[in-house]
Length: 111
Length: 115
Image 1 (spheres, chains in turn brown, yellow):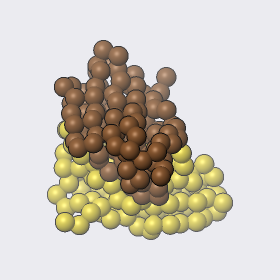
Image 2 (cartoon, one colour):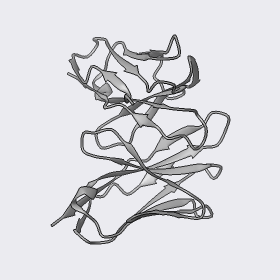
Image 3 (cartoon, rainbow over the protein chains, first blue to last red):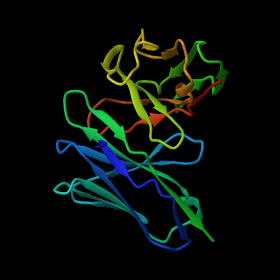
Image 4 (tube, one colour):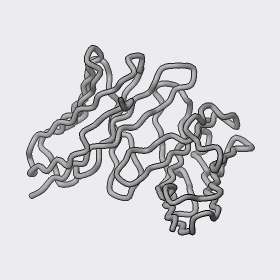
């Protein structure tokens, strides 16, 4: 089983739609979680951290379910500029933290 | 503030040749990472440095890949000899610290094509 698993998509949604991505992780001792965004042929950039209580940043909401070992990202009112690949990232516990990236979920927002 | 600098941006070589990539992290960032990203996949950690010491190189193919960060600042990643499957983007990233909440800042990457 992969350490971090995501549906690669693509998710094709119209502008204004709400879309949700899920990500599962295998290491129950994982301590912290992130969503990164990667535009085509660009480097990944941090979108948001994922906190146990859930967190929201504008149109983006991230949630963590430790019991089921998954995290989610919800995008409301999708914009054309949201088209990108969304990478789920999990930081393993231990003396040397290690960030493991999922394969990413591709989102294409259309008119 | 200057970001993570990488060079070269693009490199095309034939299999069995060697190649080296250079990375200069954000000033003051103690932790430096090299990731390999194959088309359609997420970045895979090759090696992680804390200052000039190696923290994790468990996924580095040591028979052909090597990396160093001699003075705890910039770093080089070398591949010798290259194989076709090494075609990928090599991303360098840095962070202030290797703690659990650290944000990674990536360079634009070095795109390698092995023919």
